[in-house]
Structure formats: C-alpha cells, structure tokens
Length: 116
Image 1 (cartoon, rainbow, N blue to C red):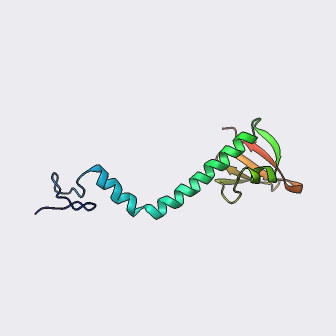
Image 2: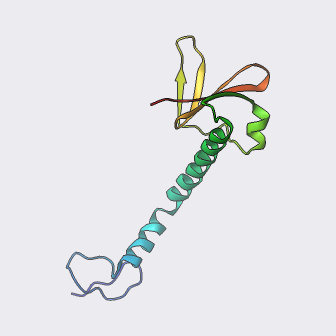
Image 3: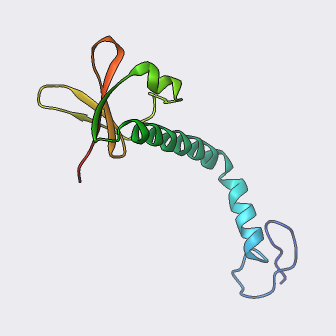
C-alpha cells in the first residue's frame, strides 16, 4: 500500500509510519494547523518584548520614576505583563519579566528591576 504526503500528496518512500515526504512539508502542514494560536502568541510575545525594552531603556539605574505619558508615548501597552507582586502594605507591582512598575499619584510610576 502506498501512502501519500499529507501536505503535497507526493508518494512517500521510507518508514511505514511516515506521514510527510520531507521536513518542509511537515513544517508547512504543522504551521497551517497552528496558525491561529501561533499568531496570537506571536503578537503577545512581540508586545511583551516591546514593553520590556521600553522599561529597560528608561530604568537604567534599577529604580527610577517616570510619567505614564512617557511610557504611553513610547508605545508601552499596560494591558500585558507577566506577573503581579503585592507587597505586605498592599502596593501592587506589575512585572514584565524582571522589569516592574508601580502606579503612583498624578500619573507617575516607579520603575524597578528584580534582583535574582
């Protein structure tokens, strides 16, 4: 019994359980299957990397103060972050990996960096 590649339909030569004629067809097939989920993850990861870069460029000292407008003007997206840390006093820090920020009064933020 001859089997055909799931992607291009070419005849498969080789192992009995083989589904694709080559790596290119296998990759193309799986990329099509995972396109929606991959696109969402790609967009989220792009935004997280951008947020991290913005925080890193502003927070050179490990702790600094900046305005919300400065972050927003740089393209920072406040809806995406990787974790939240709540202090004993109840203050909430939002982290993008090891770069964090906390909202202060009058649209100011304090930027911090975790020391691991």
